[in-house]
Image 1 (tube, rainbow, N blue to C red):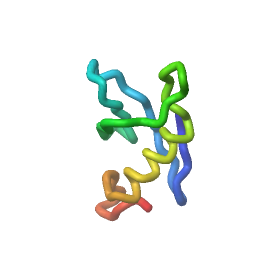
Image 2 (cartoon, rainbow, N blue to C red; image 1 turned 30 degrees about the vertical axis):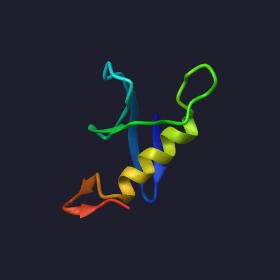
Image 3 (cartoon, helix red, strand yellow; image 1 turned 135 degrees about the vertical axis):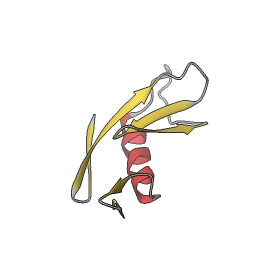
Image 4 (cartoon, rainbow, N blue to C red; image 1 turned 120 degrees about the horizontal axis):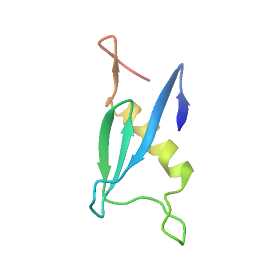
Length: 70
């Protein structure tokens, strides 16, 4: 999925790490969460995935030209 955050677009993927944790990848950088907002049938909600990717950007996970992406 591609998301827009500020002036940037990011590639976001949900990964299967083989654990109970939820792992996402934002522009090639993986982040692991112990919990995720899921539907009653266990699927990760797209709104949670988008918000988690944006939060990773806000937390300084991704860098662009030696400056943090906002």
